[in-house]
Amino acid sequence: MHPSPRRLWWLGFSIFSGNALFAWIWSVWLPQPYESLPLRALASLLGYSLMTRQINHDPRIHLTQSVFSLVFWLELPVFFSWMYLCNSGSTVWLATIAAMVLIYYHVTDWRLATLGTITGGLLAWIMFQGFGPTAFSLPESQLTVHAVVFGFAWLSALVLNLSSANLRREQLANALATMGIMAHELRTPLSTAALIGDAIQLEVQRQPDNPRAPQLDKLALRLHTLVRNMNHQIDTQIANAKLLQLPRHIEPVSAAKLVTDVVAAYPYQSSRQRECVQVLIHDDFVFRSSATQFSQVLDNLIKNVLHSLMAADSKYHHGALHIEVGLLQNRGRIVVADDGMGIEASLLPKIFRPFFSSDHGAGHGLGLAFCQQVVQSAGGNIHAKSKYAVGAIFTIELPVVG
Image 1 (cartoon, helix red, strand yellow):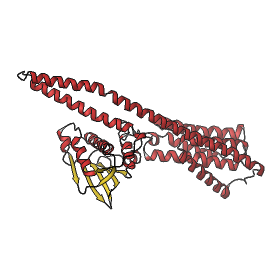
Image 2 (cartoon, rainbow, N blue to C red):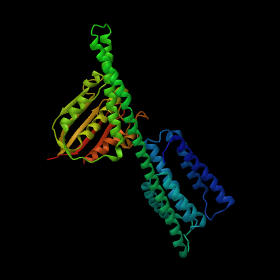
Image 3 (cartoon, rainbow, N blue to C red):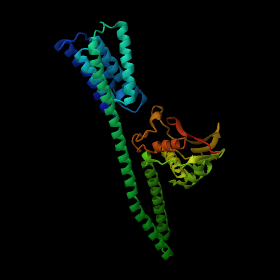
Image 4 (cartoon, rainbow, N blue to C red):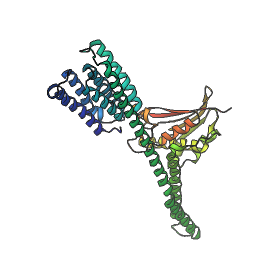
């Protein structure tokens, strides 16, 4: 499921109103052996929690996701298994629990659904054994039938969920391919802009006495700087668009040379940005990866830091972007730290997911996912620490060669 405040509200409303409706159906219209109005009221309140603004205003935060997972775990596998047992596995509740499995796998990930179904059913069974209203009296001849029906529902839910995951992966691949094509297409107008800059500079050389020559030369320089910056951004986006098809490289890479080269070549927007970068080389080390891909990793991190510093209205003091290279316990470390806006603690576990942006949609959310994949392909790991409005620290740990 792709959560949004509106979807969460409607899911909560369906639980809230659905329990009230079925309490009337199973109590008045089509009475069942066991129906508990207090339990239905409690189940409705679980749904109401998803309707509150405090919970559904931002589906990305940890509180919302925890409440969502808890509500659906209690509402579906726990509550439905309890009602199935209390009604002695009646035909109605056999069909209902089969539908429950399909719904549960639809609204969440298959791994969580599998774990939730097992633990929820087990908890319901333990509670039923402790204080269930009646003994479970399903005939032995029907146990196999119920097992087959439940197994079919579970297997169908699992296959459908995995198929949906494959479809989402294919859609991701198509989206990334489209981004790569669009980035390539931008090269043409940029080449035209570069030619215009060359023509302006050539005209200045032909007419050095023209009073407008200094302004024209400055204009050509700004145009070439813009083209260089845009080409750099296009290179980064094309690299990010190859997220699902990154080749594995084993060339030796010097961490110190990599960092110094990337910092020197980065297209800063101003001299203040360039001067805010501080590089400390404690110990150089060599690791196996792709120098090109790792340059894109550092480019992504530097770009994020400069954006964060800009959002924090930074004065770009020296060391506002701080990069260190060193060794710790026979592992190479590249640390990128900043004094920018930082990242909310609740968002930290998600920042490396494709298309997740901690900046409320300002970015496409591929940069850090690309960074993680490149670092992991080199046998390393990347993690982040941050405090909102204080800054962030990204640490890359890598195995050392030799």
